[in-house]
Image 1 (cartoon, rainbow, N blue to C red):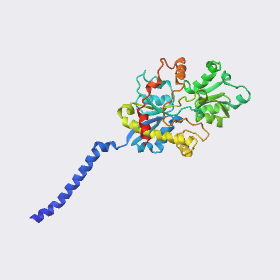
Image 2: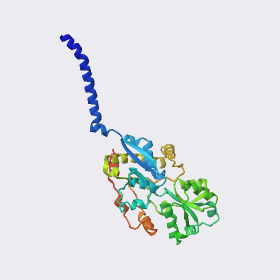
Image 3: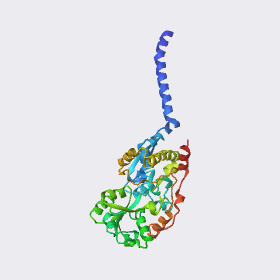
Length: 345
């Protein structure tokens, strides 16, 4: 009897052990610690501009993965669209050029925070340039900013690209209303310059270099010369990262710092890994070349506000902003400071 019971028990005990092991494994999978190991999904909004470089490099180099983040890229046609997507929660983070949308955020009760620099127009790093047809310079029609009067320029209306030639003209005693600003889009600007339909453009890089190389243009002014250290853009978080998942916001920033470090090495004096970074950015239709003026990138990525007050004055004068807002009140510096400390080790 005992022997038969023992023979019966053994397979039954084996089944119990298997069930117990499976239950234990299931319990581990459902434990809070295990859930935390699942990648956190985030949505990044980009416009394929130079200021998007840090996040795109971090994505392609696997720095977000290292931080336990699963980042999905959503591409928008322009900064206004990306800002709108952040404001309604369609994306969690963007890198954005300077716009009234950012400065008006608090007035409209939109939760967006400037958390780091996305590059600046440091001396030698002008990311916006006024490019004119070479014939205008050779003939003497254009000798200096006062000669912007009467020219037809393609640019982004109410954007820093329009502000630059407006201020150049203003400081030369010329009303910017005498400049014919048109919004053609970069695809049409180059062909319009070639056929003489416009006199030039005031555009962001890498498009300014494109006008020089493909449309027989001459760079006559750049943002870093007129307004040194004016921001090229900011890294901006929505409430997902500043309130709902602060830890993910910290981890995103660490990865972002690494991406911007690689950008700085690629285009700084070291020229380290330049070809690889160019290939990454071209994948996202940022058509830079080794001759393209690069973003100015500081080591601590502190957001710059140089000359932003003058830009806001211009926006108010144009009627694009009604109330002066201090953009520094939009800064949430917790995440940048965290990354600085983490990367010291």
